[in-house]
Length: 422
Ligand code: AMP
Ligand code: GLY
Image 1: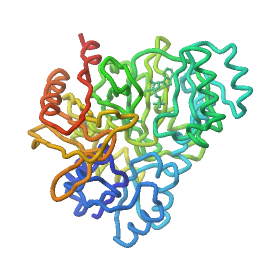
Image 2: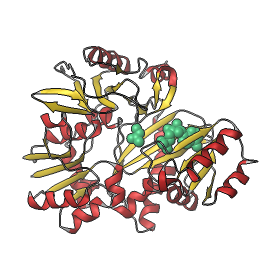
Image 3: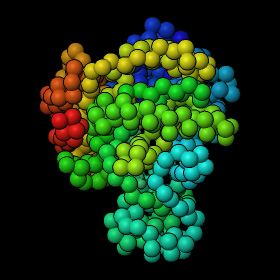
């Protein structure tokens, strides 16, 4: 079968490598992919948001199945457009992708269906948001309604910062139209867990849990990024908590979506916070997480494509989904200066990954057989071992063999998880 993956980051590289193992796939394309993905799939220079381009390519090349990975094309309706021309897809349709595309939608859904989340208010007028902030508990969390490249969340530690955040979103429009509606919500505390789930809208199968490291610098200092590293499984996510999440969060969410006639098919990502009052939803994503995918998929023992086909057919209950009981660690190597300004175009030196090691390329261009940096997050070095400590050690040994000018990575990925185990 001819399969295309829409997207071009480290997550897509992990998806491509996992799909490549399926005996059913004869040809793999990535749109647009990147210089590193080009070693595992044929990259086609069509942007992930270019829905017309994606649909024409699929038609002209008789694509049998499409995997739409990033949030933007999903929220724009890429799956609807591909299914209209008869191409089965992995990923939710537009009306279900709204679970990530609109924070107002997802917060209202959780409230209506009693799914635990932070207390919140929605504002469309700046004056009423500012009025509310006069008495809101501090710290407080301010979220732009729409997609904002993962940057639409501001945690305000003081009332002045909260006022600035609201003004920057609603008056200065720093996130464009995404900030014309905002959510102001209660600040929660506790360990964070990412749980990616396969679902066809009726059956839901959680993948192995993981832990992201969102800040740019060691010790969770510095700016928020797309994610600087991950480990799996997440030690805070005990079997008891997993059962509780299944009962109070995961199943209620897919049932709520079904009830709303927005059946969700694909990967539903639950960003959870384990508070003293139990697990609560921090965010939903309508897709695989990046870089969570880079630790979760290497631990998947079953055929990913087979699972995706079952989801597209609505028969996930018949799929074989099993994970290894090992651990994985992924260290992101970024361009110095990321997430603000950084230089690109540096030649990369990469080792040949050994057994249970993977280098997932996120931002690179290929020229004359060499790879050059081309993005903020450049790559993820992943390793698998029998325990977390071993995986971290191996991932860092791999990372140290990678070099390019101004390379930056955190030295403490997984340390918090290790402490939790002790
Ligand atoms: P998001 O962009 O929704 O993933 O949010 C980014 C990060 O902000 C999350 O990973 C949390 O660490 C933090 N965050 C979001 N909402 C809250 C909240 N209500 N309380 C505390 N932290 C939050
Ligand atoms: N790593 C967080 C995300 O993919 O949104």
